Image 1 (cartoon, rainbow, N blue to C red):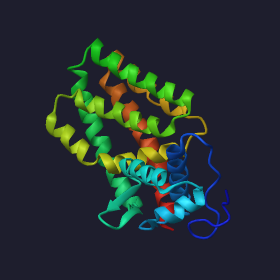
Image 2: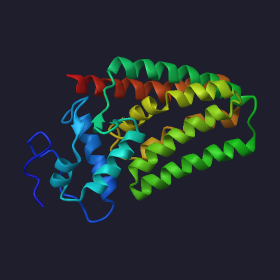
Image 3: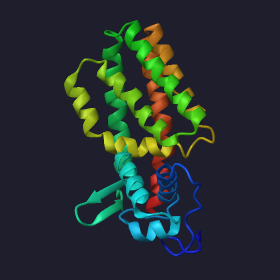
Length: 231
């Protein structure tokens, strides 16, 4: 397999292993987006990518669909897939909205949840650790989002959850980039532990502080990554 010519003619991608082609392709495309090698609005041409990866077009198409579910790629009817055009200001605003929604939802949940709901959240964090052990980064991204959605769902406020779901794609674009910040995916799982601790203690101030830190740190690292892509 030859990787001498990248999407932009510069050897963007690495050789693939024989297994998990879709995951590997998605991971490399995501990294290329974050590193600015694929620009916002740029078309992901299945034929050119399949030639560079040395695969058929099918796994490239599936990888693009996976990235679409994560918010990094959008599809247009009869035109194909394109790198998502999302500005750093857009993402900052999304994080601010997410922060307000999650803190309010979590505080509402604090008055409603019991051992059953806390155990569900614990199992979700355990799943994050398991996926880190297995090296399944894309699945970990999805389950990370699930943890936060569960917390909002436990608020019992259907309208709040609907707004949360409405901004899900944009949020998942940010969560996808979290993987670029840690050399060990276990650290992503560990960042959820203070939230669990605050919920178990039933401490609203500790819970608010834990969420402000958890989401704020992500915002302060991910938004500049988007700013770098823009330039």
